[in-house]
Image 1 (cartoon, rainbow, N blue to C red):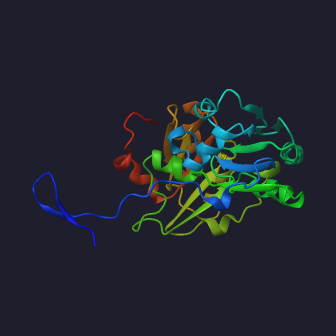
Image 2: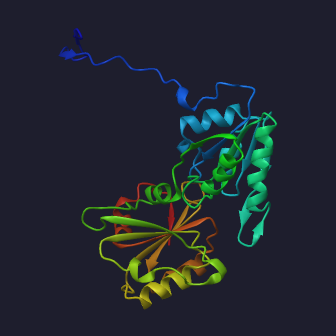
Image 3: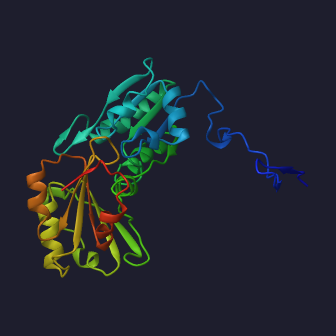
Length: 283
């Protein structure tokens, strides 16, 4: 049993267990340092202090890093000078490198014995196409691991003072891609119109008018609160708040830029009291 000791106020306190020093998980370590491998690493939504310890360690030890457009400049500045950096980012209708070529490049680099980090904004498995990339790696017999990152929904909502769930307002949350393929509306809109639910649309800036129109058309009240978060968790974060009926006009007049996240639900109404980042500009 632990021996009691006296604290600064002279009270008897029972000592707890000794702290455990962090050590990397041997399960995810490569026992053959000469063999190449790929780590799909989530960089989070932008704030470099939201990187996980594992993400930081792999970035520091990489030979080459293939990074996306959504990885923030602050995080890129942490990459050592001796690491080769390859931009493979994609924008709407403008892909620096097609996805299939990215997949094959990962295989080629690993087969050359390189330690490769595929660095993605947010989380690799939430609208990050990480599943497609590791399917290719698995088929090619390349060793890989996946390091989760804080996804934009939780990171941006937290930094905007909007809880995605709340016992009084939302018992469920949906993550939806707002990058509508071919500008179509082929989404289950009726399923989105539910009580006590929060909707989070990734990449929803361009499709915002369609999103609002369809939700209202399928029965959601026009005065449902909406927040659009631009460049969330960064020093340039901006939040525009409105309703389904007026958010489009507010966003057009705000000059906000991608990347953006759209949050729809009664939880948005809590922001006026819970915005802990007082310097964030709000419209």
